[in-house]
Image (cartoon, rainbow, N blue to C red; front, side, top):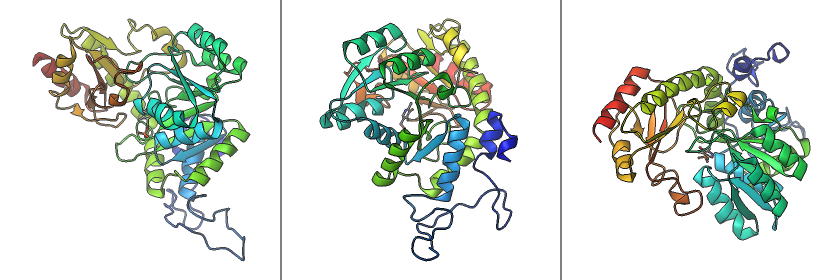
Length: 384
Ligand SMILES: *Cc1c(COP(=O)(O)O)cnc(C)c1O
């Protein structure tokens, strides 16, 4: 099958999903066994030995992940942060620096600043939407890793991936793109020159708010080997049921992202025209400073829309008055969610250079009927 398919949706459905040779089951069985019988000492069937070092359901997911990001190697983990931790520990040593963009997932900042920092890893933060700031920071002091989210969380800033990749290549730094917000259905960073793609598979890849997971995809064989060693030796692997749910989610990623993007575009233009909304952050709006760039490196603009209200109190009230949009952390599921970053997802970066303005609310626009989403936002704004 694999030589007959190229398109994104075909790869999402079929990569790693060969039917079961013993029964013909079209959906490969989920393998729960933690250990594998050996035909004599060291005589492994299919290379499997023990559940932490390898599991067929996880292999299937890793094959699928590599295919949809157009990379050679996919590695799956028990969470997005477990994936980030494995990558960073595989590439950094004491004295190395990470250059981080100034609008990233709070947990990424926390991991580097509070876990890796005490082990001697340096952290510098720059606005990566302005590549001249990246170049200046690299000139001042080399960095081992350039880490960016585009679109970023929660302000939906857009960074030029190809431009950043070139700077990284010239400076000998590894360019890592957290592609959680766009997903590979809309943006494929490795094709634009990035070295590693990171995912919180908990979000759009899983897509149904029922599994926590993380992923890395890369091309370099030596790097994949060292990260793979950490995955095995430290053990933050995906369990079989988590791997299965993520694989199942990915099969519908393409059509979900299309609908998320359509619904989000409708939400963004509705909010932009509303007099109680001070500002709308959505890369699909022509008023967004990164719109042209987003249009050039993404095939649609995704399902996350952030908005600023008059002040922090109005933002809190709004976040507590929606009904279709449920007040919860996380994003990327089929259901719409509203989040107040300052006190929820981004509480860990309060008071740092990554703090989110207190008047900002983030919406994860689900795949419900658009008219219900818009009516809900209308009633919540009317109640302010
Ligand atoms: C959620 C998230 C993470 C962390 O992933 P977990 O699965 O929660 O560990 C990393 N990056 C982004 C952009 C996220 O939204």
